[in-house]
Image 1 (cartoon, rainbow, N blue to C red):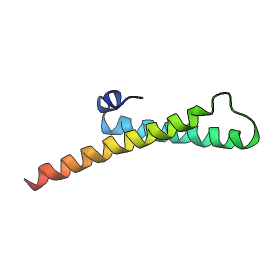
Image 2 (cartoon, one colour; image 1 turned 90 degrees about the vertical axis):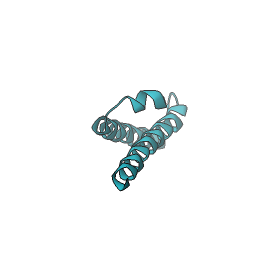
Image 3 (tube, rainbow, N blue to C red; image 1 turned 180 degrees about the vertical axis):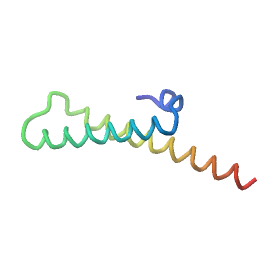
Image 4 (cartoon, helix red, strand yellow; image 1 turned 45 degrees about the vertical axis):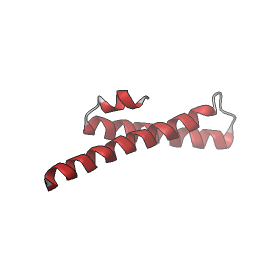
Length: 70
């Protein structure tokens, strides 16, 4: 998921997507421990997606906190 796509989501939608990606990441890690994955790069991609979504969520929180200080 690209940053511009994430920025179009609402805060609640981002939280839902983070949770969905983390669950999928958990399942992939668990499966990787017992068998070879078809696409091991998917682990890296999911980790980065979660980080990207958390970063954008944090940017919004900082912006909201900055607006209330003014």
